[in-house]
Image (cartoon, helix red, strand yellow):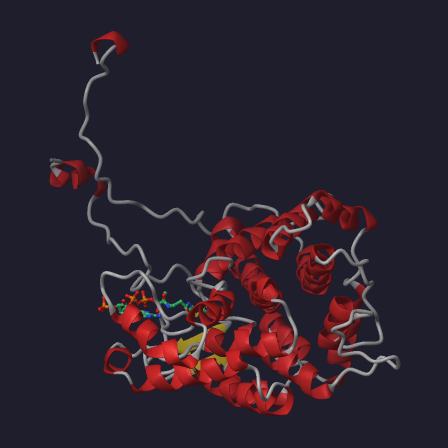
Length: 407
Ligand code: ACO
């Protein structure tokens, strides 16, 4: 056994908080969450008001700049983002190196990381103009790279971004143009309801203070690493099923449950302490009463289902599961409500976005938050210390080396 007291006497006192449940890792002015009261504010504005009234790019501007844009600022920012959406032809060829069935998140991590190889010469993190270019470039290019990942996975040619479409329309066009599943008819008409639903999802996912992926971007950023590499690190952190991978996990779980008759069996599995199965899309580390994003998105989800996908058994199953879990004592006692990802996966499915692209969709939206946090830490905390958590050492005490022939 290890005498921890003697091991730690040199370190003084420090806290052990592996999940950062009571430890703030930074100061920030971007997003406020009150988990008990279900409040989420971006730069002071309630998420409900932004979701009702804003374009995603307007919200991205708010996150980056701290204020909503006026009409001229909005027009100029939109133009800047559209202008930066095009990717280098050489970068496009990176996709050829990926196996046809590579997960789009794997491609996203790799291709976004490789932006660091394209834009290193003009990247001086101490220059505010360079930092701004980097932030807007990342927001502009992420949707193009995301759509290209999908096109590669289905073996279809890459579709170039268009300046005449807004951010969400442009993304849908790059994804589905000339595809049998397209929302775009021969006159390039895109159903405004679908664009609105996507815009809403992007706004709801744009930032969420110090979640695992944003903290990863900040931790990597604290070392002075290239910002595109920092965002690639954030994408990797987002991928896990306990974080951004949850929306994909929800659809996989619904497929596993199969039909409404199986719901009680899977609810019982989720409650069984000896069974690792959890209801994906339920529970949240911070929201312990309700997730305000889930309240907003639930309404859109129900509207979308009644408009487009009336008889899909998977959606009916989702509604049955939601109903059962909301009435179950186990979930009520533990304050496990459907989170934003329970509904976002269902909406993405209704938008014909393939399941393995769901976390990529989250990454597109969250890029606005990641780069806002990266900008904030560069702008407001010059000379900040490198992020360097401590640990509780539980290994052997000091001992002497034994030559290999005596072990
Ligand atoms: N299904 C069944 N039981 C659950 C679930 C769930 N989805 N989530 C939590 N519990 C139970 C735990 O078993 C635990 O029970 P116990 O008190 O009897 O031991 C209790 O509720 C508390 O759970 P913790 O894991 O301590 O809660 P924590 O706050 O650490 O976890 C998390 C939050 C990771 C989101 C968890 O609820 C979970 O795994 N949910 C499913 C995955 C998911 O939907 N993730 C998306 C999060 S939202 C986002 O990233 C945008």
